[in-house]
View (cartoon, rainbow, N blue to C red):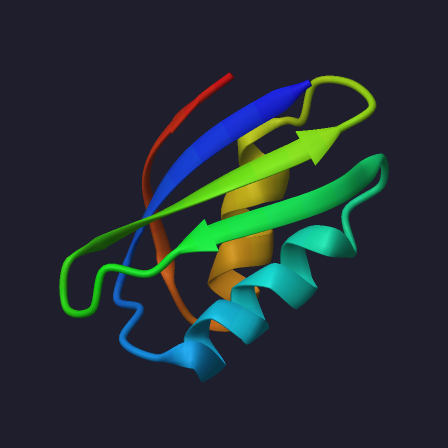
Length: 73
């Protein structure tokens, strides 16, 4: 299953690494692909075995220091 989230505040490769690491730590996640849009809204596609709770995703992204602005499964 793929979930796409839009994330604000990301500006560099370190941001991508931090978000990827936090999202990959979620149970059932098998991959994360982040498309960086410096200074704008970046996009992450999360591949998982099943549906993820929006709260889980939001907390993981917040732990990395960023904000989810929207999510779609």
